[in-house]
Image (tube, helix red, strand yellow):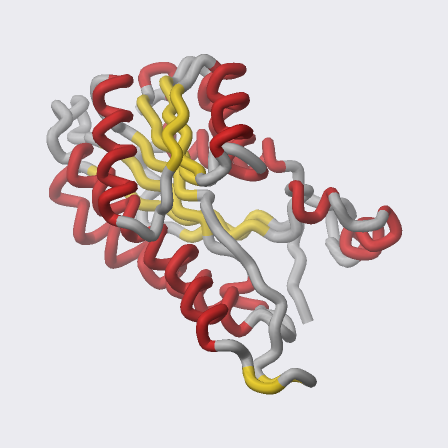
Length: 251
């Protein structure tokens, strides 16, 4: 597969890693449909890259199916799905206010894990209908985990559990979809300069960056996008989870 002939849906496409991916793919010739809840920002990004925006709740089957249908109408087919939508709460299992609210834990799993699977399965259904390329390829799914799946910190029980689930899906989903010519890979980012981190004080950003062995800086969302693009084009890469973290190991 090549980016210049790719038709991609990108969740979380209105900001952060998803926005960077949408922009990078479009710059390299791909058709892109952005899925996000942020309607205002989503339309701005879509207009700037010549793509299409669909307001989408990844946890809702009807909402995602609607977005997939619109993507098909706009692009003609779907050959790539990049899942970047996600949320995070910093709450200890038991803290000064009592036990971790169950609703917050459930919501994190619902968005990060179930939402990822929801979009992936519905996108894969349409990829399976594509005419195969000479090597049998019909599509690729790129999911987003986190180094928290392996090195979860205090207050990350929900987030780590959700991202650990995304890691756990990589191989079985790749095996499930292999006969259809659909590959599945996962990126586990470290600490990236997303809008959430950009809002932190400069000294906090510098402190976080100092923990990264090499290079000693926060990740650039465009680096995530470039890896996602590599996964699209590297047809022999399948069922893999790649850490993108500058060798950071959280303690």
